[in-house]
Length: 137
Image 1 (cartoon, one colour):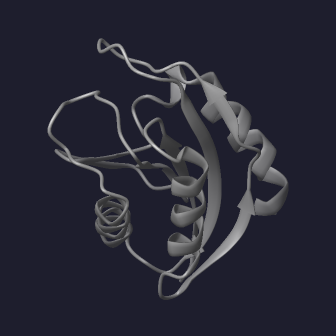
Image 2 (image 1 turned 90 degrees about the horizontal axis):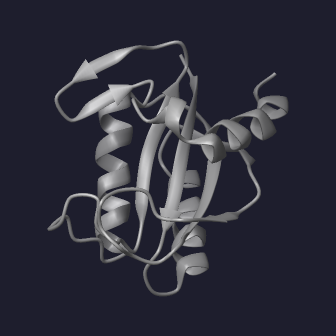
Image 3 (image 1 turned 30 degrees about the vertical axis):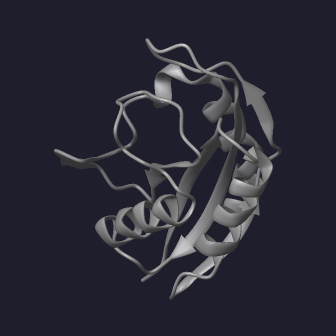
């Protein structure tokens, strides 16, 4: 059974737009997954305690038969392909992929929480989700 997943894309290092494009292509090519919608790209200030450059952000809507854990593993693999290193918490990154919503599911695991706990704090995510809701019906 397929479900709709909202995945946030962000980049603030290097060729930011290219990293977002790579993520869109790779996520759309996942098995048993289709890209249903893409929000506009917007630039936002970095969030967190470390000084760093601004982010390019975008949200995509996937229709997928993958389980949330499998989608997370795929997101981490795509981040690695983009040269992401997880050495500094809240640090700059070539690519950051976050599962924000996954159908009506609630997941509470040490490394996977859905809905994403930062959703209420990120106005740009909320705007992007509203933009994509027309593709969800």
